[in-house]
Length: 334
Image (cartoon, rainbow, N blue to C red; front, side):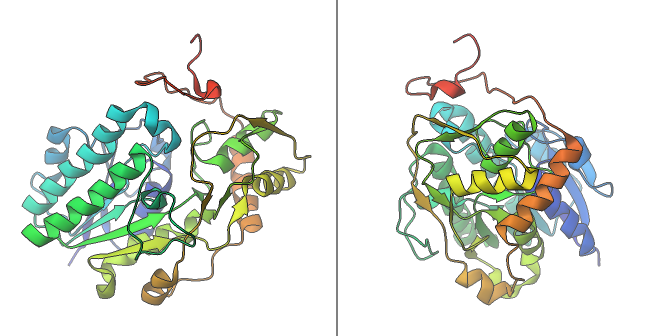
C-alpha cells in the first residue's frame, strides 16, 4: 500500500531534505511551498509540487481535496526568530494560523500522523542543556507561535485523536540553505559575506553560544519518525550536542574558505545568550548516527556555497514595528 505524504515548505532548506528522505523511504510525496523563501530548484524531481501558502485556507483545502495523506510533515514557516518581534502579525499569520489551517484539514482528512517542526526557540531562557521536560518560556513571537502550535496539536489529539510528533531542531545549517536571508542562519550569512569579500558581522561580543546542527543530522529522523511507534504523541529535541560561540563559528567558516577571520561587532540585540539542548530522548527512540562534526559540516556546506556563488541579501521591507529595530536590519532609505 502506497504511503502518501504531504510536505509543506518543500522548496525550503529543511523541507526539501525531508522530502528527499521521504522519497528514499518509498513514500509518494506531495509538496507545497509559496516560494517566499524557498527555491523551486530545491524540490526533488519526484515530488508532486503545488505552489501556494498554508496561510491561505482555500489552498490548504485544495491540497486535501480528493486525496488522503497518511502523514503531514509541516515545515513551512518564516523562521526569522529575532525579526519576529518587528513583524508580529506576519509571524502569527504564517507560523500559527497557517499551521491551524493544516491541523483542521488533517483532522477532517483522517491523517494518520502530523509531524511538526517546532524550534528550540520555545524554551526561551531556560537552563542548559534544554530538555523536553522543561516548561517552555518563549521570549519572542516566533517561539510563542511555535509553542502555540505544539499546544494546539495536543488539544487536537485529545479532542479528535490526531496523532502527532513534534521536533525541536536548532541552528540547522547545510546545503540548500538560503544564504540570501540576512535575518537568520548565521552560517549562511557568514559564508555569503566571505564570498563577497566582506567582513563577517556579529551582534554583541560574539560569546553567545549555540549548538549547530547539520541538516543530515535532522532531516532523516523527521522523515522516518511516523514509522517509529514510540515516537507518537511525543516531543523531541533534534540536532547536535556541542555548543560553540559565534566567534568560534566565524573562525571555522573562515578556515573553510581559506581566509582570515575578520569580524565587525554590531550592537548587541535582545536574544537568549546560551542555547543548546539535550538529545538523550531522540537517541533513545531513534538511535541515530553520531552527529556530523561542525568543521566537517561547514566544509560540506562551503563546497556547495562556492559552487553556487555569492548572492545579494534580501531585505524584509514590511516591518510592522520599527521601534528598537537593529540599524543593520532597517530597510533601505529609512
